[in-house]
Length: 313
Image (tube, rainbow, N blue to C red; front, side, top):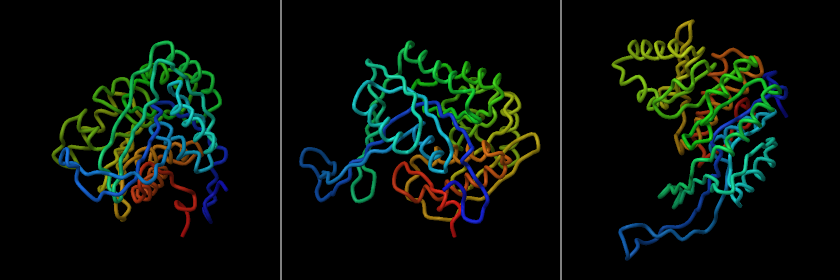
């Protein structure tokens, strides 16, 4: 099923290439009934576990859940977590081109959950080597001609060290490029189609704003200086604002209880990419992405939004 009920929207011809920091999200669930006698920390008796696609792989999973054709390029270790990512991606209908690095552990985020509350997160990560990055770049160049929208999911783990080259290749091929940014050096994203920072990320680059007018001035100045067509600011409980040459368009947040914001940005970027690949205007894409973000924060952990949830009653 590729269209929402009574919407006429069909994503089956949308082709998305997701490139970036691929990771495995692991969850250990358990009961907390006492405090450790060794230190003032809760003792969690683990009763079950779960594994999900994380980072760039979660973006790909969300796009595939909407019926789009999705390819994923990234770096993993030559280990069990890397093979698990490939298996989960295959189950989700994602075409994987993951460069394996025997000297690299696959990036893992391990979350310990007690009574539906996150108690601890442990990260395992290491930047990939040059030879692995070169193989990853070759895969991007091979797949780029067959895609409509390129999504670069930057979590700062090192997989997008060649991002300027990737953006240049995509622009020369006439592809739309969406970047979920990281860090305070946005010059590396020059020339992309859409940049999607959240409030904290944008503030790190342009400084704190006094009011809406000051925000608009700072965001538009940044967008124009980097030759970016759209800057989509995700604002949590304040919704989203899309900045472009035509001005600013804002949408309010979807009214619902926030349960877990993990991976919400991935969902927003995925829906935005699928909508643009299907030929919809950027403001319509933002509105649907905003709806999807409102749905996914009501779920535990990294999760995908289905067509039925987006377009159902």
